[in-house]
Length: 538
Image 1 (cartoon, one colour):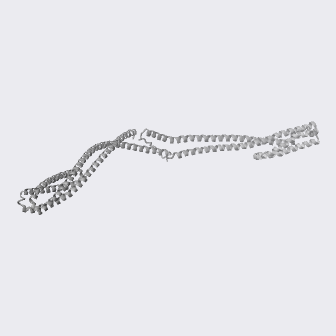
Image 2 (image 1 turned 90 degrees about the horizontal axis):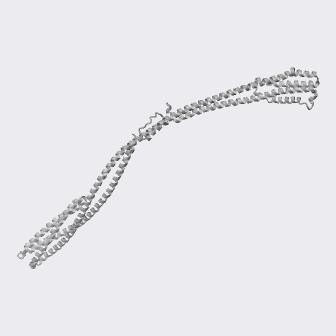
Image 3 (image 1 turned 180 degrees about the horizontal axis):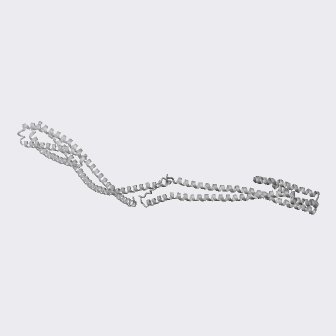
């Protein structure tokens, strides 16, 4: 596994662990050196204290020897009795030093001696005992006899006798012991210096090694982090410069490698996004152009629809006028039919009276002529009304055809009105023919009085037919009036719907204008998107 595959945290942790280990080693070396120096200083202190004790014993050896010489000289000069006088202090000085030297011998820490030194020290107290025993013995000699001979004997003993030998043992033993202790002090001092030098070297070497390794680890760790980090920073700089083709190419598995991969993924995602935005910007531009064109077409279509709606509204107004005219005509036709009904009833009544009053035939024939003339006038009126009804039915059929689906019912009614008008025309033609027959026969009425009954019967029959036809025509006319009223209502609704269409066209035009404005804004936005995207390298 490559080092670059190890995480930055682990590498830094390992570096810190190595540094910590070196610090621990350096601290251990320092602690060892300090411990050695402390032990050496402790031993040096013990030896110095021991040397001081030996040196003090050595001092007391010289001091006691001096006091001994002085009190012997006092006896030689002043006699033995002088030792008991208040002025004498040399003998007391020896006794004080004797007490002091024994105290020193008691306080010496013998555990600090070597075996040889312990053996020498063990000889030292018996040597002092022997020395003081000879001193007491010489004192006793002088106490017994302080003559010159005794003094010479004492001096001989001190200078070269047993007393001298005992003092020589004390002095030699003390000197040798002191020398041995001093030698040990010097050796311990040298050893302490060596330990100090060694600990300093170990500590210095350890610290130097730690420093070198720390520098190497710092350089290694810094390079392992900074180099790929510089690559990432450079890539980010190019990415900030809108270069979306940048890639880090870091073949690592640590955090920096993952950072590089994340940057690559981000750059690729941005590149795809910008490319998609560029494509969509073109699509938006095309769509806005298409929307503008469609809006223009819709505006033109709305204008055309508005014109057609105006024309339809005008036509609906015309239809309403025609329907109102037809409604008035139907009312007039109803009035005429009512008149026909009344006349038909009157004719029937006359026919009945003609049967019973034959004796008034001539008068009746004259009146019949007048009635025939009136019937002719009525027939002409009916014929005129039928023609008008037929014409209105034709116009209604045409208008119903123009109205489309809404005029289908009205077309059926108009057809029925037309058929009824044609039947009315046929009936009036028949009535006209009959009236003409009556008029032609009026001149022959006098000669044909016998045939009046038959003629009156025929007239009665025709009147019955006329009454039935008139009743049917009345019903038809009423139905036609209702249909015409419905047609008028429908025409008014058509006009209202056309007005609604015109209003809707106006609203549509407003919406289309808004759509055109939105399309223009969309085109500007698309242009801005294209300008922004053009700044990227994809």
